[in-house]
Structure formats: structure tokens, C-alpha cells
Image (cartoon, rainbow, N blue to C red):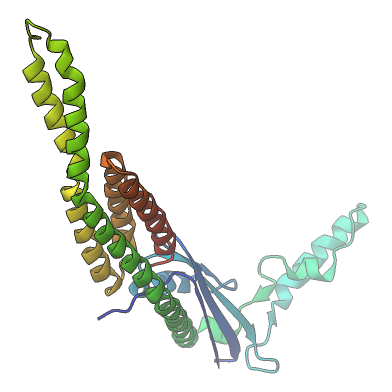
Length: 299
């Protein structure tokens, strides 16, 4: 069974080979959907697609940033190669322009011109290049694995917090059920008083339509007093929440469930006929909102 995971974490891994040394840092923050971004040195753009695929295989939500920092090993085989023929042609042209008043070129400016710096031999060797990128990809995946472990550690910390809020919601629903049992009697007393207020209007000839009014008002009051459906649905939502926090990824489903929780709590408050039940409903809404804030951290 997959473990509950958060969306915030950090992972790092290092590697070396083929005349290079490199380090990878992977970090993530909350996000409604999954977004994997890759940043690496020039010439290693081909790794981006593989990194995104590796991220999608490990995560369902969150903004994931992966950075590859690489440098050549000093004194290694991969030395910079300067194309002397191309450089001489650029120098000849630059000297001609300087005679006409142009600013003489700088060394770094000349080296930045196209064709002056050539790729080392191993970079022109497809097999050597493939071996280098494969080694880097292994390190990239190790960093993503470390990030996943970090996010799961956050999930382990979130789990008891979520369970506590769900338990509080369950306890409040039980209180509401107990209070709702006395709500019918409160409605009956109000209805009796209302009938007493209407009775004098009958006079000696009677009041046409009074019986119908009584029936309609009785039905309206009975409907307002009945909160069993809301309480049953809240109980079902509590069970669903417990199942979801025991599985992963569950973030999107929990987001939707929080909306359903709040919908039933709002209806419970609107149907309440007692101060006590209204108080329970308001507290229930506050706890649901606290749970919703924590759910925003769940993958």
C-alpha cells in the first residue's frame, strides 16, 4: 500500500565520470497539479525529457524543480579545443576593421564567436556522450528518489494531524446527533404556540384555508427539524476520509471531500432549531476548515 505523501521536500545526489563531476538538487513545493522543471548546463538539454518522465513516474502533484550542476574535472581528458584556423580568420577581419577605426576585439569576445571553440573529442563521440548522459541520469533519478523519501516523511508527519481532525469531526457529528433528537420536541412546542396564536383568528364563522395553512406550516417545520440526512452524509464522509488518508495519492479526492463536508455542515446550521445544535455546527465548520488547510499539503 502506498504511503501518504506531502508535496514539500528536498533531495540531492552527486556523481562523476567521463571527465566530469556533477551534483543534482531536486526540490518541490505544493501545487494543484504536477509540474516538473529541469535546469542544466548548456549542451545537456536532451536530459530534460528523461527527467520529466522520471518525475511523472514518482509524483502526482506539486511543483518539482530539478537542477543539474556539472563541471569538467581539472586536468581531465576533456580539454577546451580552439580551432586555430577559424580564430585566425576572425583576427584578420578584426584587424581590418580596427584600421578603419573599430574597437579592437577582446580575447573573450573572440572565443565567444561561432566555431572558435570546438567540442572535445569525446563530445563528438556518440557512445561517450551517451555514457555520460546515462551516468548523469542515474544521479538525477537518485535525487528524485531522495525527494520522494523526503515528501513521504512529510506525509508521515501529516497523517496523525489529519487523523486527529477527522476524529474531532466524528465526535462533533455524534454530538449533533444527540442534540438533534431533542430538536423535534423544540419544534413541537413552537408549532403548538403558533397554532395557539392562529386559533383566535377563526372567530365564529371560521377562517377559510386555516387547515391548509396549518398543514403546510407543520410540514415546513418538520422538514427544517430533520437533519438526519446531513448527519448520515457527514458520517459517510468521515469514513471516506479515513480510507483516503490510508491510501496515496489522495490529495485531489480529499480536496473534493472537504467541499462536501462543508456543504453538509452549512445545511446543518441552516436547519438548526436550537442554539446548542447551531453551536455544534459552527464548531464543525471550523474544524473542517482546519482539516482543509492541512489537506492542501497532501499529494
